[in-house]
Every structure is written in structure tokens, then in C-alpha cells.
Image (cartoon, rainbow, N blue to C red; front, side, top):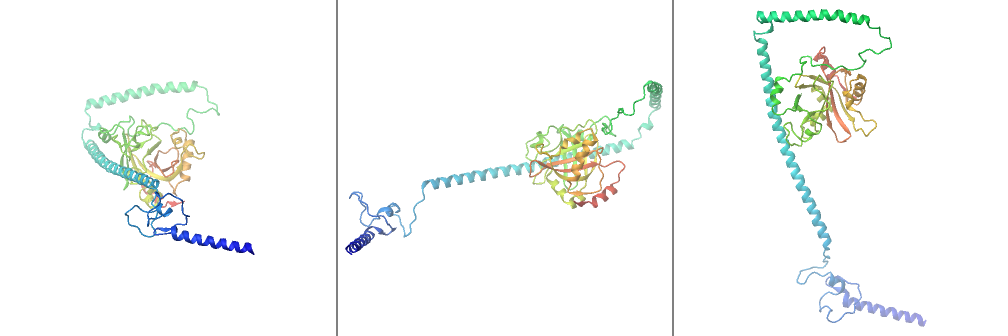
Length: 411
């Protein structure tokens, strides 16, 4: 019982001591301070009416107005971090502004350069057509040569005929003396091997008149691509990197230029023409090829004109595909197999183009056809969007091809 009484007295003493401590040090104008009083010298003791303990450390500077609930000032590292972030955002904004400005300048320069070259090209085409019409209507034709010229031509023809008659018996005798080939022996003409074909109307591969004029601005200009309501641009050829960031004049431009693959040889009529261009969001170059994935756009723009410096060409689109072309993938498609001289190798790529096409139609395409591929990049760097067309054959009618195009359907 005595112990209980002592405990009670001790508790009462602690309660009074705690109450005195709160009255002396805890109640301040700046908040509650639960810390016990500290033993300090008279020189460091705060003046009467000044905050004590933690409240003193959190107090605002002397003379500053404050109110109840004053918050503790932020540490210096937060201000430095905020300053660094603001500086980074400012630099990023400045870089974006400069990039957009350069992009806009390149856009207007590319359009201006294209319009100037376009005007020069169509002027040259008109002049060449007028010159051809004048030559066709001129009375000084081959049939109206002078008598001396006609006699010379007749004599030359007679000499060629005589030489041919002499050569025929020699060939006949040589073939008679040669042993007959076995049934299993391969003939000189390898089956499935594509032969080189000269340009039908330009066997000597002479540059046409309209291209002679525009090539004065750049010798790399080798063709002109026209898609109604979308493209009317020059095509250049050098290596596959030079014109990625240059226009047709060779000036630096983010839009680049449309260029022919460096592996394509134009000395004879090539079986495959592969054109590259940037997928610009502004629609320049090959930025509009994405519209071919819409069936209505395809049906209205299925025919493409691509004239080279050696011959004119009309093509019809038979497939629009997005293919994996990165050699690092096992299922990638090798577009360069289209340059092969073997029909079977070319046919494998054609089958891939048709199998992955957005739509299907009844347009027939074989490995012997001359192909035109418009290739551009997509979101995935390993893939390419390809608009594949073939040359319109001489025995085909546009009405028949238009029928197939109009009846095309999505897969």
C-alpha cells in the first residue's frame, strides 16, 4: 500500500512538471514545441518573447510578417533541381523550334525547286512534241529523197542481201557437219533465263530531247515519275545514300529526292525499276503512298507514268504491300532477287508481293514483265511499304485493266 502511494505521488509530480514545461516553452506564436527545455548559457538564450527550440529554428527572418502555420523554407537542392529542369525544358523547346523552322524552310525550298524543274520539264516535252510533229509533216522525208540518195540506198540493200545469201549456205553446211545434240543435253538457250532487251524504239539508248534539256541542271536526272493528283517529280540516280538528304540539284534538304536504285542498269531496258523516296508527313516525295492502302484511292490512281531518259512507260499497280526486308529476320523478303536473270527467282518475290497485298485484283503479272516498285519506309525500320506496278503490255487495252481495277477488293 505504501508503494502504491509512492507511485501516485511520482505520477502527480511528473504531471505537474510536464504542465510547467508546456507553459514555459511549448506554447509559442509559431506552433507547439514538444522538446524539453535545454540547458544553455545566458548569452545564447533567446530574448523574452522570442521563439525557443525547434520553433526558433523554423522561424522566419526578423522583421518579416508571418502568420500561424508558417511553413518551413525549401532546402537549396530543390531550387537547383527545379532550375536544372527548367533549363533542360528551355533547351528542348529551343531545339524543337529550330528543327521545325529548318523543316519548314526545307519544305518550301523543295516545293519551289520541284515547281521550277517541273515547268522546265513540261516545256521541254512540249517543245519535243512540236519538233516531232514538224518533222513528221516535213516534205523532206525518206520517201522523197533525191535520185542519187535512192540509188545509194538500193545499192547498199543489194550488198546486204548478197552477203546474207553467201552466209546462209555456210551456216547450213556447218550445221550439217555438226553432230546432233543428245536429248538430255541443255540447249544454248537456258530455260527460264531472261535475255537482255534493247529499247524497242531506241536501240542505241540515246537520251531523249526533253531530258537533254533538264539534264543541264543535273546529269543525275534519269527519269520523271507522274501519279495523277499526287506526284510529278524528277528521278535521279547515283548511289543509295547521296540523295537521302539532298534535292535533285544536290543541295541539302531534309525531304531528299526520289532516286533510282544504284543496281539498276539503264543501258538496256531493265526488267526491274526500284525507286526510293522518304515517307514525309507533309506528303512530299513518297509520303502519299500510304493513300494506296485505301481501295478508293487505288481505283482512282492505279495507272502510273514513269518516263526514263531513253523511253516512255505506262504502268498499272497490281499490289500494295508492307514487307519485312531486314536481312536479320529469317522471313525477310529480298527485293534484290528481282534483279535476277532467272524467272523463277523473280517469281518468288512476286508471290510475296501478291500474298501480302492489301487488296486483290485480276491483273496478271509474270516474271517476264517489266516491274516498277515504289519503296518507302514505315514506322518499323525493318519493314517497307511497296507499291508494285508492271508495264502495260502492247496487246493490252486500258478498258480491260480498268475493269480489273474497278472490281478490286480488300483481302
